[in-house]
Structure formats: structure tokens, C-alpha cells
Length: 487
Image (cartoon, rainbow, N blue to C red):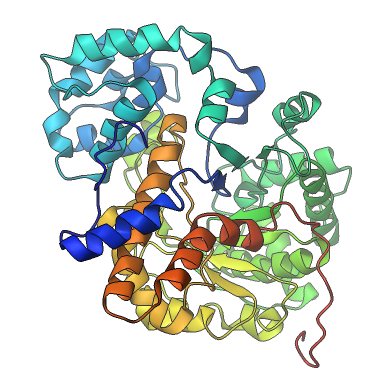
């Protein structure tokens, strides 16, 4: 990438570094497949200029704002909106200066790496951020953001993004995606596709769950006052998402637990939840049961399931009360997969029509549970290190931990999982560099021929995410041919 130090993140040993350069050159300019992220589709649907550097890079990025909160700078001083409309800082330059004054907090973090490479590769700015350079960097970025070449769709082209998946609730009317489709950017096979994320109508502990379920019924034209009507409404909304281009669903549960309940048992849980009488155990059981139900639906409609467990949501209660969800108040927890996933895997784990991509915030499970599971079930794939684990060091450890028992081809490719649009190419570049270094070591140790390493790195960067997430192929799954593969 122009502006980046050529050997960034490559091995220090000269021979391996030379091999890494050779392998990286094969993927440096490949298109980006981004099958999981949180970019607002309105950004590309409306294609309006970014307002200022602070609102582009700082305000929406909780990786940045949570670090300053840890040092006593409240998010309101960085422009993060409040739930009750209380005053927040609105001047972009003031936000930028305040952030620059705390830039030292990010030494050694992936956030600094991504942001510095964004300055260099997107804005052609090679100054080191600090109080003395804050205004110059801000002014140079603001001038570029006023140019047509820096509007969202132009940057999308420049970033070489082939497919970008956003994430929407079943309660979203998908109007932004309809506009993208009308403009030739969305729909099945489009460049911007949606992802079905039903947490707010599945998790009984989600604020306003019963009201959300009622709204789901109105959107789908089904009676969600009953459990069968609720399932029918979810299927209807999945159909709408598939029509809008979705190839996957996403499930952000506290744990990875799955559970097979009878229809009568599930209906009893659902009824208790709708009457406001469900307790925490009921909520966990219903979430667990619904994962198995969604696996069944995925076999029918072809949506790839993504499971993102392990986050204690809104752990910082003050932050949630003041600013709402998704602003940096979540914390990872230890997560168990082996027994938690057994009911789902017993039911459908050997059915090749199902694809389940499992992520973790507990990297110790890669070796102990997730890699052996992915290496033993046709339906299961490993998602890339995510969120708190998306640093270069963990990306390296991931390959070291999982390749022994899962190989490369039971992994699903890199996902950027970002709300920061301009960081997308940088994050993918970091992943490609780490994979180049790992494969270079295998070649140097005579464990893998160079030609196979070359084929592998191209697959990891491009072909695997397209294949696993069914991007560019019909969603209707092919029935299994091996006897006993579906149960």
C-alpha cells in the first residue's frame, strides 16, 4: 500500500522477511472481501461528504473513545451523542485537538497502527500526530474531505472493496439497501449487502424485547403473540434480507450455549418472556434454543450463521446509561464451546448445507476447543480474531494455534468488524502481512513449498471468505450426498 513502510509487520529475520515480501506481493492489490462489519449503509446510500476529520475517525470509533474514557476524558467531550440529548462537544477541531493531546495513550496499540496507516495511505499525511501537529493534520484532512475523490463511494472504489457486508436488525426496513440496489450497488450479488442480526428480537434481556417482537410481527405480517407466529415472522424477515443481498446471519449472544427444546417447551419460554415473567435462566435457554432453530432455517435458506459470543455487554453501566450501546462499555469473558455447541452439532454439525462461523473473545479456546471442533465437523468454520483480539500479535498466535488441527481451509478469512470506514483497507492489509509472515516461516522451515504457500495466501485473503460466506454463489444449499450427513 502506498505510504506504508514496505516491511511493516514482516519477520525480523532476513530470509523469512524476503519470503514474506514475495508472498505479500501476491495479495497486496487483491480486492477486499469484507463479510462482517458495522458500516452504516446510509454512508454509501447517500454518498454525502464526510463532515470533518473528527466525525470521520474519532466520534464513531469506540476503540478510541474508550481509551480516553479510561484516562478520565468522557465521551461527550469527544462528540459521542448522549441518550437523553445532553450537550456534547460539536466542534470537530476541538475534538481533534483533545484527542491529539492524548495520542500517547495509544503507543503500541493496533488502534495507533490503523490510524497512522490511514493517515498515510488514505490522506497522504506522514506527520506524527501530537498537540503541535494536530491543526496541520486536521486542516490537510479537511481539505481532502471536501474533494469529490473523498466521498464514500469514491473511497470505496479506491479501497478496492469488492463486497462490503453491513449488519441490520430484522426491524430495519432495509430502505438504505433498497436505494443502493436501485443505484446498482446492492441486492443479490451487489457490492454492498446486508446481514441478518436478530439479537434484539431473540434476547429476552434486550431492552424492549417484547415491544420489538410485536414490531417484528407488524413488519412481517405475522402474529408474533404466539411462538409459531414468531418463528414465521423471523422466516419472513430472513426472506426479505436474502432478497436484499444477505448471505449470512449474525448472532451476538453472551455465551455459545445451544439447546434443543420441544416446540411446547420453547412456546412456554416465549410466553413467559412476552408476559414479562422470564428470568435470566429463561432468557439464556431461549437464546440457546433459538441458535438451533436458526441453524435449521439456515439449512433451508442458505444464510451462513455467524456466532459472536463472549462479550459482557454494557458492563460499564454509567456509559450505557449516558450514551447507550456500542460505545465501548463491553468486556470479554471466558467462553466455553465444546459442550455449549454440542446440541447444535449433534443435530446439524455433519450437514454440509450448514455453515457456522464461530468467533471468540477468549483466545485460549482456539487450541483447546475451537480448532479441533472446526477440524472435525463439516458445518463449522473458525472466524478470524475479533474485536479485543484483532491485534497483529493475536493474528499471529491464531495461525500458530489453529493450523495444527483445523488447517487453513477450516478458517473463514479475515473480517474487519469495523465502524471506521477508512480503516477497512488498513485492517485487511495488516491481516495479509501477518499471514505472509506466518507462511514465510513455514517455507523457511521447509514445512511448506513456496508454490503452495503462494496459493494459500491468495486463498486466505480472497477465495476463502467468498466461498465460506457464499458470496457470488446461489444461496440455495445443495442437499447432502453422504449417507447420514444430516440428522
